[in-house]
Image (tube, rainbow, N blue to C red; front, side):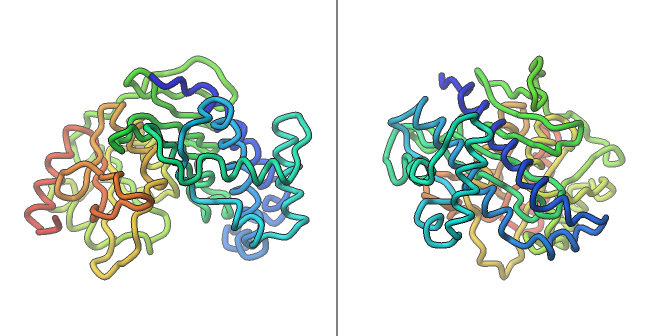
Length: 326
């Protein structure tokens, strides 16, 4: 069993850093228009927060699991090449503020590279800010950390969700169960995927960014499964997985456009898959097979994602077969 407590704490710290960046760089531009925030704040805040959050997580991994490998979205090469010296120093200062200690740029570089390209029986899959557009627009984003075993199966996950539906929270797996706590701590509550089947009561999630998937295909699939009247909610990030795990939603579909060549990156799905499965939900490709995390940084053999409670998932898979989506 993997003791996730040091990583859960790191996820909380990473979320605190992200919130600090939002308050400093994004909130001043907020005037009720998300588009205005995004255009004025630009890409710099999310870049600073990305590197800072990942460095905090990798620092914790270097201390608690020094021999483990890491697959992550960011790295020190980009950190050194793509952002200014002033921004690098701000990243170090932000990390130091969260940790309560002095942090140097060299330390940040070392943490960002921890476990990179290391072959180990356990791999940590990190997305320091999943939902970057949501982060910039002050919508949803999460800090997501998944764990792969020696067979490249997802076995654990941690997800800090600063803007969760019922308040900022951290989700994690433990002893085969999915749990949630308030971001600032408190008692853990066990998660259970819903058992709802009545279409009028179902909540179906899609990505806020419409370019990520085909709304037409997903609508056709819901209709074919007999749940066309489900309420549709569009949100950013892997929070969609957390909502299905918590029973706050019933399904999440991600069916790319037929012409899409955009790969599914493993850090966009690893932590969420662990949470949903531990909560009794089902995560699969459109043909019902598990997501395959054994191909490096991408889900190279998977066409799409059907994430649902255990009672409606079979109906969605059968509908996908009828529509010849598999």
